[in-house]
Length: 560
Image (tube, rainbow, N blue to C red):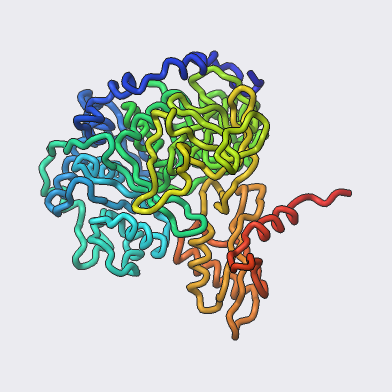
């Protein structure tokens, strides 16, 4: 076991990893649910009702950037969810139909999610930084029957043709025809019988980041609850005595799966901070709420490091377990956390399509090596494949794949209403290039696709390119990730201008703001390069990898 496997002063971890894999039984795990995957269950019951018998049991610790706070019990959350489910029924929303939420991290977000599930409907997250174009595409994919939002985000929906009905939380910014959600909920009964669904029925609808095309819909069935529970138990090691905070936004998969669904499923309180990430606010909340178990992305952790050891000193030794996801964890982050926070920080790997599947497990004993994503979670078998779908031995690079025939926890069966070429020959190919270790661990080599990883977000170039091309000055565009020491990558756009337009810094800034407004605040190109043409194959296919390689080469230090 490496020097980073345990944080200084922390007790030895739990059962041996191999023993946990051998002991895994899907039926035993399913028996922990209140309902049945075969005969009927409800996600609101699993994540709320069964923990609400104790009227003092806490579901949410919430704090806003302006100092407001609220503590919400499971019992109170159950009533709010029942009222929202009653509103959906009154609106005619049927089980299996989609309800979208575009809300910040506020208590009402949990009521909307759980109330949607209580009614047997499917919840779709819309990240609050999305612009109209990104929102429109996702609503078209899901066919959402209702969008719930707040006054800040409501104007974005004005630009979407054929948008579904809108319910607004808050007394301002309500358009004619909108529902004032507070008034609507006050009219509903505080009880609503949960609608039972089967394990194969959906309860979430997400979207991929998008690579060579528009983002694809990812349908999440109720049986995924079992996978989420194993991740929280074995990888995050969430214990009853922990104070847990996953700083990821629930508008994305890691936040929705593991800041909302996972902890509530285990009957554990989660923490929301409705404000921008800052070093000061992060350390303050860790200290104020006694956070012992933290999850987030390496970008946030690197910002903590940049603030120096003095900023970390007040909470040194408080964090028992720290989990990292979204991009490979830098070894220097691991060393710094051990030295200055006395905390073990472990890397975890997953996708929107999978949830987390390869982890350095806080709750299981196995070697933890810096630079390794870890071992397959119990309930999954991973393999490294060559181009002919043959499994490769250790130390040969290939594509990371999930063995669908020997992974009882795997819930992804294909994209929503479209083909899934990544599923072939009994495997799901992730598109990430890795090497297998002798002990079964996975080490990353690189990505086989064009997705850009920036500040923990996965950004598809196609969306950014599409937004750029909407501008009258742009005739062609290619978007790649440029290496960046703070964000892992930044979005860089190569733009071919239309006749009558000349390159200028002013035009570059105009294009950046255009994409930020149309798409999202995190996906705009931080750099814009004007070029006469783009590299293409003879058949006209854009060769992004040539531009990406160019940026990687330019970022390398020049040897003396």
